[in-house]
Image (cartoon, one colour):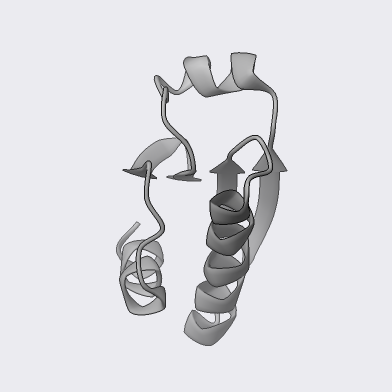
Length: 79
């Protein structure tokens, strides 16, 4: 099971990344759990200073941007 985290304080970009990541995981048919992390102190644990960020299985994959759906799906399938 993939452990997916979206790091963000709740801005529109953070919500968009959450929605697109959920869509991408469903399209890819992945077994996953997704969590939105809004605690700024947790961002620092991942070394993230700019949000939104996509973290899969503890690895930061994107920071400060919302990639297209296809890119997110590719990232999820590769990790």
